[in-house]
Amino acid sequence: MKRLQWAFTLAILSMAAGCSQSGERNGESPGKLVITGSSTVAPVVGEIARRFESLHPGVRIDVQTGGSSRGMADCRQGLSDIGMVSRDLKENEGDLIPYALARDGITLITHRDNPTGDLTDAQVKAAFSGAVTNWSELGGPDLPITVINKAEGRSTLELFLSHFKLASTDVKAHVIIGDNEQGIKSVAGIPGAVGYVSIGAAEYAMGREAAIRSLALNGIVPTLTGVGDGSFPLSRTLNLVVKSSPQGLLKEFLEFAQSEKVHDLLENFHLLPITD
Figure 1 (cartoon, rainbow, N blue to C red):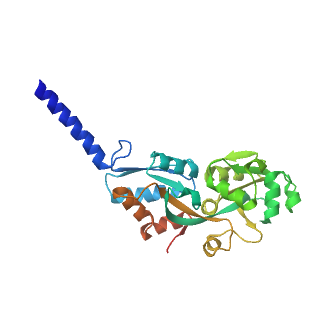
Figure 2: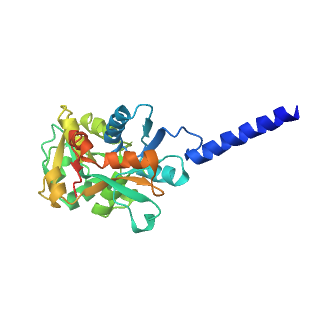
Figure 3: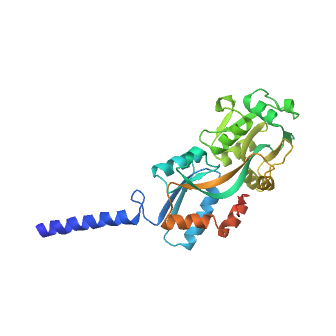
């Protein structure tokens, strides 16, 4: 009986040692990665993950959205292996290691039938703060303005507020949305709506006949060319973040995501690959 108990104890200790040495996260299989965060980054990372899986049978990669704040929090707490963040990291976020994936920008969008083509920074601020409530006050049609705003925790919101020097409480939103797809559907369904989404997401949607159009800002048309040469001000880096120096499968995936092997996927989503 004692021999059986000792053998059982050795087996349990051996199993525990194996888990420790494998580097598994929260007991997960070492052939699995969990990636959470930005809804701007998630669609293309999902495609990158599928391609990586096809080259590595047995590997599973779970991609979940929820916003950049979730991605960073999950990564810090060990709930995910990688966080997706749709902005540059701040000086006080040095506890995370960024891996630049692509460049993107933010564009204002209206319904396709709204003829308004250009707004200044001051006009955008006035519309989102409720200082003006009709498109006729901005040189457009006699149509009430419906403000579509991003939910808290979204990097797109953070960059928008920073550029236009607005506080969250300044924005008088009629509709609060989460990801880019929700924003596009909301604006496409409301003739007087105005919102803001990723340039890549907007171009991707317009290419599929979504009833939206992009607005020029201070006379500058929002394009990836403008993002690349710095002429369009509302631009950002899309990052994957980890909390420690990656090893094994994690390192291999990050290197793959930054390689030329996925540039076609980035371009399909109208994102600008980083080549230097």
